[in-house]
Length: 138
Image (cartoon, rainbow, N blue to C red; front, side):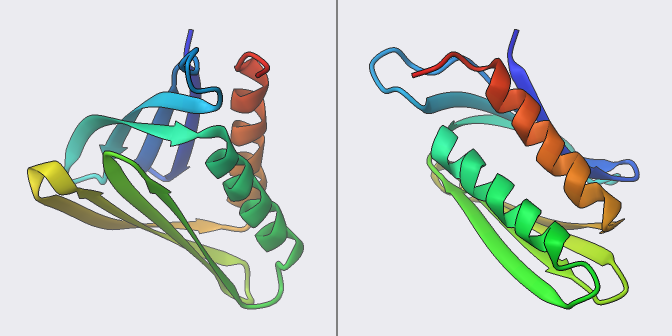
């Protein structure tokens, strides 16, 4: 069974389904991506790296430690699809996640925002931890 990471707020989400790593390239994960903005739904496949997920986990944990301060952080997955995630944390604890997806070979782009509060930061971090723990070592 594939590991799953869902960044959501309300009904809108971006969900990543991580498959087992390629034997030939440790840490390189075939990844299915599902998107629902409330107006648009779609899915595509790409690949991500374990190190990218570890970097995102660090970003989320850092933002969680900065609740009460304004902060911004950006993360990008880059393979068959470029998936940019920009997190803006407001002093009052509101979190805006701006998602920018570019499928270069298909000349397609989708941008949308998720509005959440600071409690989602730890939920998203936990989802990454649980998914990475499901993957085989290597």
